Image (cartoon, rainbow, N blue to C red):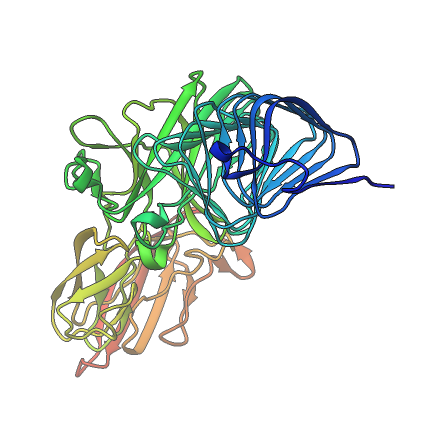
Length: 491
């Protein structure tokens, strides 16, 4: 049977100078046995002297202030008020402190090494006023852990040591969430800007160390333009075209020099599109290179591999300059329709603008059809999701009354250039004849779309040069023309 120990004002009356504490220990050794409950209703616990040893459950509807020694083993301490540690706290492997009140502080003059810390009570804020540490599991649940200028170190090197539902860690100045690592696995940092500065911006970071060497990495997320903090986002190296003005990160490595892949998470719909990361080098933002784009945790991601320079600590999303190729000129007979085929690579969220709009089927699509009546040069402007731009030009050229025949073909059934035939789309008449080197006719067309497949009398013809003669007439010609030339058969 579980034992329940109720501490009431009638059993232990606090001295007048300690009227805020319902349970005031001034030198006794207090022990809560395994399975027992110690419940302090509507008041606080102050361990001014002596030792409190608990193997059971301590529920405090107020503050817990330790000025001496609290020793815990497999226990749970639940409090709705502040945790104030001015002495020594030692927790064994299964001990847990549950913060299940509203606004609570993790404070005191001495750092606490919690084993397991659960930040409960719903959408609340728990605030640090001193460095703190968790050696087991930090469960953020739905709370904000506001570390302020201080560090929350999760020294358990398991990748699952930080847990959450919608909770996050926020920090100011040099404050941060830090994690100890010892594996080539993903360590997630659920960080956001502080609610004390406005609506929190949740933008987490992930580290993946390149070796199992022990390291400690830390993260703080800062909402707003880094320029306001002295890190001008308009100053960057020649490989970049823009640095994110919406938020940036402080990234730390306080133990070891093990390189790691760094993944930044962002919302493309609100943050814009980004394809690299940048590091402040004391005078400007520098491209970190070795980048890949992906997704995870409901965000778009950029990942930089094998990075180990964390001085200075400012990091941001960025976009590389990019170039485009508007493609080959399109050669057409008058009245024919062709299509532009630009080459555009590694551009996030591109938009297209073709000019002039004359003869184009569309001006905001990547591959517009074109039906020109005259030679026209077109300009293609591509803009990425962050506003970076690149341009190139391409021509649509009219070839009037010219028979378009290739100088070679390869009838090897690979689906590419297998037939020797005219490329014109405006032919109303074509008689095409092909002769071998002995003057023997090996092919004659029966229509404008007909072509030679490299066979004669059901036999593959030899590699070499063949002569062709053609009588043709386009839709724009009043009478037929005659032309001749050579074509090379290859396989």
